[in-house]
Image (cartoon, rainbow, N blue to C red; front, side, top):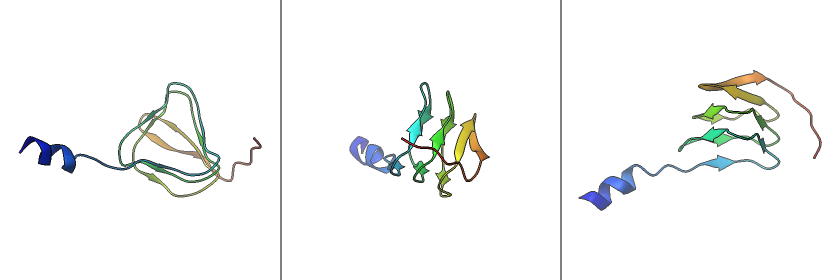
Length: 72
């Protein structure tokens, strides 16, 4: 019973290419972050952020800015 309970609680985290994650950010299970996005300092991210080139931040996280262009 205990092993089945653990399997049900597993959710995948997907982080796209060239995503910058600042220090102290919390990426929770089940999160999806699109390519070329930025996760702000101390953000708590849960859910799907499917729009690429976004600045994501806050508690709980939300899109703060769209169409962000940054270079590696």
